[in-house]
Amino acid sequence: MKQLALVIDLNVCVGCHACVTSCKEWNTSGPAGFLADRNPYDADPSGTFFNRVQTFEIGAYPKTETVHFPKSCLHCEDPPCVPVCPTGASYKRAQDGIVLVDYDKCIGCKYCSWACPYGARELDQNQRVMKKCTLCVDRIYDESLPQSERKPACVLACPTTARLFGDVNDPDSVVSVAIRENGGYQLMPEWGTNPANHYLPRRKTQISIHEDELIRVDNPLKKERQLPMPGSEEQTLDDITSW
Ligand code: SF4
Ligand code: SF4
Ligand code: SF4
Image (cartoon, protein in one colour):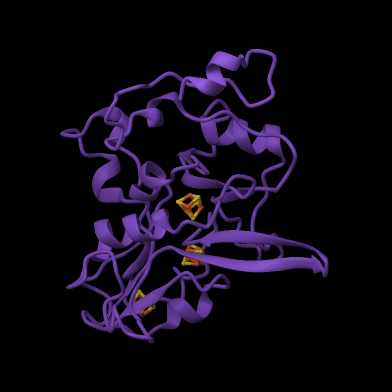
């Protein structure tokens, strides 16, 4: 069965929050656009976000490292948030494995958010319905968009291409290859939820970036040449000085 998912590379995530704001803008854009729903400019902003980046420090001083950890619904293959729903609003699609909430059926009881071990669901205080990542289901199948843009907003926005998107049950997909080749892992597998989303660990190696995501609107000179990796044999002095 097809199972769409995100694979997030913790090795290259820089905690910039571009995925957070692009998600907010696309999915729950409120009065302040990509900012929080309430008090967006005050000391205590709050509101519904489908995707959040948690930043923490690991290790013992002075040998510490900062880790940025983006987290959203993991589209579990055995999602405990589905059977607890008393109205059938919380469901998993058979055709692509995306876990969704039917807002017309949701009564805001929060059973599903208590059942989710990842804290991935948030009640929209304005609409009084439960919300969470939809993998941008309303754009990934939109045939009016170019194929390269039929991806979740966060994937398109990430400046370091830390976010990959695809079918984790297709062994040849970009996500399956990345998981296989880089030691990708599931978050808290002991809960038996079998999350579809995976994380790539921090490591010394780097994965290559997507060619189709190098095309950026903020590229006034329209230079699309991909530089060789710093320090690689292909890199020349001209590469270093011409940009
Ligand atoms: S991460 Fe939470 S909300 Fe998402 S499918 Fe799994 S249990 Fe449900
Ligand atoms: S909050 Fe909505 S989706 Fe969640 S269990 Fe209750 S009715 Fe179902
Ligand atoms: S946009 Fe990419 S680099 Fe920035 S926080 Fe999100 S995953 Fe990390």
